[in-house]
Each structure stands twice: as C-alpha cells, then as structure tokens.
Length: 259
Figure: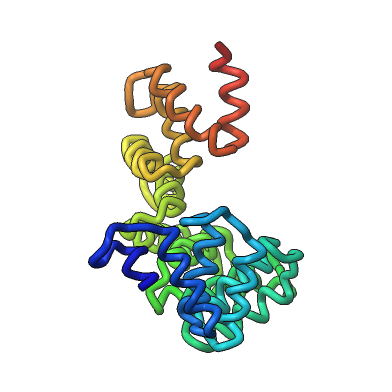
C-alpha cells in the first residue's frame, strides 16, 4: 500500500500516506519498508527530514541483509549524517554491501582508497575498485577512472585514456565528466584545443545544475570565449553557481557583479 501512495498506482500520490503504510509494515519487520521509510526520513518526503530516524531504519533493514540499506548506512557514517562521522565503520558497511553486489558500494570503496578515508591511501586499489564498479555499470566510476589517468592515481598518467573515460561518463550525462571534458578542450589535454567545445560541455553541465559548469559557463560569457561577451548571461550563470556555494562564483559575484 505504501508503494501505491508513493507512486500513485491506483490512487493519488500522497507521500504522508505512503509513509504511514511504510511504518506499519516496517514495524512488523519488513526490510523493504524499513528501507523506504528511512529514505523518506533522509529526504524529507512526506515527513519532516530526520537523519537520526533515517539511520534507525537503515540499520533495521541492514540487519536483515538489505543491500541498499547497508550501502546507505555506510554513506551516513562517511558523511556524519545522523551518526558521528566514522570512516572505518563506513568502509565496513561498504564492503558488506559490495560483497552483496552493490555497485555504488564498490565505487565508494574506491573513493575510500583514493582519499585515505578509513584505510591507508592506495591508488592501485582505488583504480581496481573504480574499474570493477565501472564494469558493473556505475557511471560515476567512469569519471573516476578518467581522474585516475589524468592524475596518475594507481596508473601512469595518460591524457588520451583520461579523455576516453570522461567521454564515456559524459555520454551518460555525468556532469563532472562534462566539466572535465570542457577543461580538456580548454587546455588541449589529450585533444586539440577547442574553445567552442569547451563552451559546449560547460553549457551541458550548467544546464544540469552543476555549479562548476555554471560558473565556467558564466566565465565564457564574461570573457567572450567562443561566444560574444554577454555580461547579463555571465552574471546569470555565475549567480546560480554562487547560490549553490561555489567559492569561485561567490568571489566573482563580489568582485565583478556587485550591484
């Protein structure tokens, strides 16, 4: 019944009612309902956002082996959402979820090795887990593989290979990869310099709401890079990025676009 109200199957969508039924089922021990209720508390859907209650129900579902709940619990520990931040516990849960086949968990283990969070930094292992997650179809890992080749993390630097993985991720609308491709065309990294392509990819990222893409698109308009100078459009995009907390955009708004 909870799913019916959540997705509007046979009834009007009503997130409060969906949570009512999720809770009745969750309190009877149904792991899928516990996961859905946790997700509602985490995102404030049909209820007031409450990260501690989200963790409570993720734990209940995780104790029954619910793969996504285990992964999300690991994310909560990594970010300190509803619990004290603990990278070691985060990695513990990610490894369990990864063994169950969760591609996001596999990716996040790669992030742990890349950043040295809960484990000693190890570029080779980071690359290994990103590659495994990418082979499982996890798009963010394609971008991270590009970063590995760009920065020489676990592999030798290779601008062409970096570009290859950025393209693969960008084809799946990964905004980080779109920005990375834009930068490659701007600097001529692994490809001939082409400011028109730089503009194209920053615009694609910006239209997805990516603050880095928005800021850099604004700079293209401000400096007339492959497009005519347009200070109104520059301000529009840079302001959007600043509103999302992009530090470069905030500084640019203060220095260039003070009213």
